[in-house]
Image 1 (tube, rainbow, N blue to C red):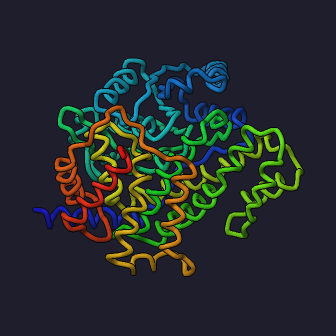
Image 2: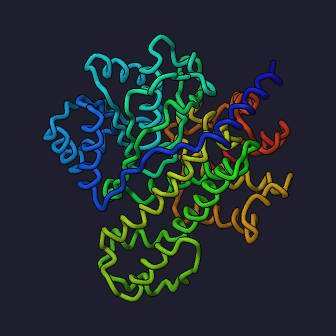
Length: 440
């Protein structure tokens, strides 16, 4: 039975990784107003009159939310709101959104927020498409199987850096059964992704860095997966390169946001690198040369756009390749500790890469010829310190490591596709280190 499942999984990823390269359309105008007006135009073109908006509570309190609401209502659209603040979306939240959608005869879903909000919207769409089936019957790979034009229209507008914005995957928690399961189907891939860098203006740097690490993890797992293709490799490798380059410039985000002079940045004497993506270095050079005010939001928006584009690429790779130990561990800690995926994944990433390098160094030949795994692992560890990436938790005691270990092994044995299987001893060693990094 296990062998049959693995064969089915391999066939699924073969089809989605090699042949299905359909991507969401990106709405990315010069500012939030232009993007929002373009979105309204698309909705009117598709005869959408009633929209369910799923968003975070903190975004609802922002001026951008008020303006978006006024523009959409001014265009004659009827809006219905579901707001929540959640780390890991649950079945209960999904069912509430489904009820709101059907009871108000909505035609589209607009998800504004991070990965959890977007996953909530995707799972809601899955249930709307297949109302006769529970989420548990839709979990897994390719279970939604929409045979007609997939409605409703799903638009995502991220307010943090997340690969979920473009992927065809949603992760949902069932607290009663203590599991976190996947929905992976092209039917729930967003139709449109609306990029508004201005939505990130008030985002704390630590949250920006933490969520960027979450995307970096998904790009690494896609590239190191046993299910691979040229399309996946290209998207994942570019995302890794760009995100690492962005994260190296932590001081730029701080200066562009908070400092009214350039003296501190000049004194840091950080070299300007030549690399594949020149946007970040060009901005840094202008700031160092005092050619523009570092508090200029246009510059910060440009940096955020680089990260958004990287997240879009990582999302294109994720779901087509499967995931590995990092996601399995992060999911386990979400179930047993309600911890954030991005933060747990960030502290786990260098530990897993180090283990892979020691056990199977040839894995890293998938990267560019000048890729040095040891240096990159050291770089990631240093960036975690620089960005002060820690795992927020309410409890002060250790997690149930034996139960978590069993959970991870079972998860890996189902739909995950790591490049190698770790021994029980090695997995327990990594889990102890993760636990120490969280609570130590």
